Length: 430
Ligand code: SF4
Ligand code: SF4
Image (tube, rainbow, N blue to C red; front, side, top):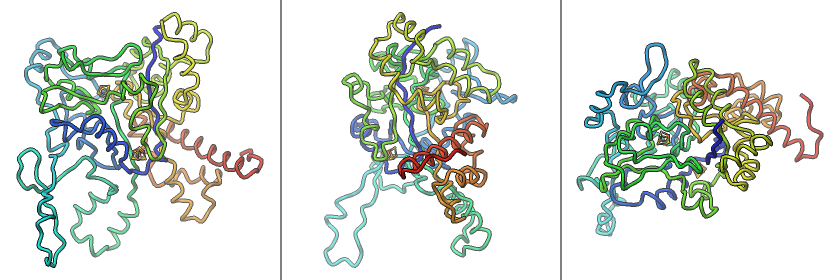
């Protein structure tokens, strides 16, 4: 057993209101610089949607990173040495600037110089920050904002305005929720594995994945190698940059900027202990449906006296072990099993996990007129919930709906239990 410590995050998706405060404050703190105009270390996606960069989940498109084999498994591309050497000099499988978006500013002079007696409200025209030309905006980091699946329907059906029966029914099936994303600070980071310069590294003490700016040679293999597309290229400096999990703040005992400014208070930060040997096992599990259990199994119980002794012997500070015991992260992931990883099938063992959204059940409850907080209603409504279980399973459990359903049932039971407690009623047995 090789015990190590890792900073991890759990986000409760039920509480995200899609305000983008986290993205904006992160940008102000870390990427408000020339060459990084298009970069959002933290972004908030509306699901379902294409994401940022768009279609980043299509692992067949970004072949430099991962490819899906005919048998359904995923492996890192480029087995032989020649192949690896060739890709160092030729790295075509990266998102283009249009897949992120072309950053723009506005021609604010138009507002100031508009004639006072103009019958129209003056409109500032967008101007490309790259070419300086007036531009037609076609995409942005949150272009899917609030559109849910309706964007596709709107594109495919030009007679939408008539709202015929078919379109109305399609709209009734649409759903949406917000998915905030940062770098996953993976236990098995493919960005580090794919860096030919040795510039990408995972800090031994807390597992934060960083780029050594002096070592980076700008090959961008990390960009194509990261399946979450969370490494960015600074076009001004010619170096790769990524989320640092605000390590200078963590070292001062402060939370990350995104956690501190989150309006919904939905980000739980904490230390977890894990067995590095089990990481290797978990990354190579054959059956994708076993991946989640294997990844959970990599974590160690910080309350176990044997783990505590081994952790201290491994040089993990005593106060870190105590912090791991107090952390809600381990409990949400391992004990309660209500937190799930994003795309475990990428096999990088991501360290940002998500509590799936339960709120769509309220929609079902509202339609039936039942009590939205009665756990018996919540539990029976799972089969007809608005966000399909299968969709969440594709995101969080490599397609297996059972762990998602278990998490939602526990959340529903907990919500009902807490309501009974708060109302002074004895908790219900069922
Ligand atoms: Fe590296 Fe991507 Fe994992 Fe972040 S999410 S640690 S950039 S592989
Ligand atoms: Fe969601 Fe919090 Fe970000 Fe607002 S600040 S979008 S609530 S994660």
